[in-house]
Length: 394
Picture 1: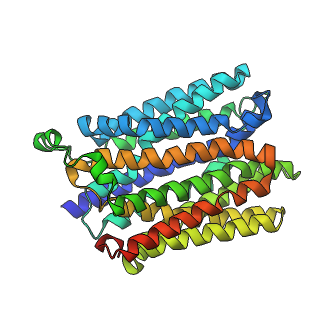
Picture 2 (picture 1 turned 120 degrees about the vertical axis):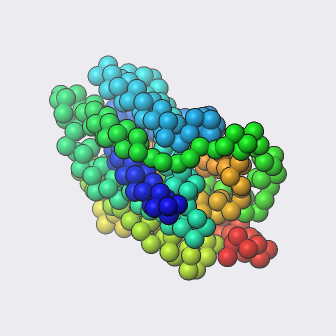
Picture 3 (picture 1 turned 45 degrees about the vertical axis):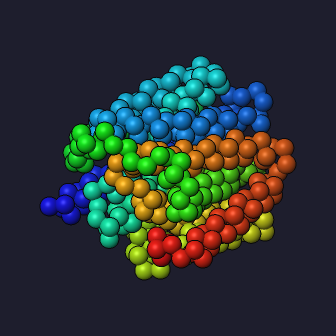
């Protein structure tokens, strides 16, 4: 019964993840371009995307605590309603040509993403120990649909309200989330018992001082931060090289495939080789991405680098999330998951904000070189955990 419920939840949450990430892929493809169109100061082009990640970071604790109180299903539905409001405001801002309003819409959309983050955690809630890494990776794998459909929908809906460009993209996201809202009604994750809600377990700082938590958070922070720094600037770099919007959409599409397609086997790789090896492999793949980006500015460079960047992110993100499940008990999971995702999206917000400024002020090379110290740091942290011979690192 437990296994059946777990697999059903994974299927539903993977579908919702696919719909949410399709919308997010659309947003990533267009936000920097819309920002550059609306902002007088072009160095602020990626500010809305950075604010989106700030809002995601800020929402992690409220979203997690709300779901602890009212349950996963109701909490996820609240998140979708926030997403509807974000899309409506974004459309209004684009029609009005208002950069400030568009930035506010990006923050609301980020709050919606703050709820979406917990799809992967929710899948692990009802999974047994052997199925946890696979449950997490299969939910993340829902993003494969986003990889295929997101950029295509962005291109198709870009001129839906011509002559105003890109407003139609947000209308398309509303339709996607209406479908997700219907699916979420069938999520079956038991709420914590009254006793579990009364007991919060160990102090959060005690949990965060564990080597397992430190490496789990570092893997997510650096994997996502490095990916965001490069990915956010890539559409700007492509257009600066006199390539077309369709080229940027094509590269982001394949980047998303690289991010999510490995999830069909990442869980199995973790079970076979250990989570530390997978995290280190992700860091090495991201380093190869940097080398390719530094070697040229042809479409092939952008494409191959972003595919490897996606795979590297997947190994580090799924690996970090899997490791996190070994750092808390059931009554501790809400605050532990929230703390982890707060740290992860804090790094993403900083990376996104710095990406546009670094690209316009210092160039494409600087954006890529900036991630190398972070990658070295996560490799050192992972090997430190392995050297301690903590069972969770196996």
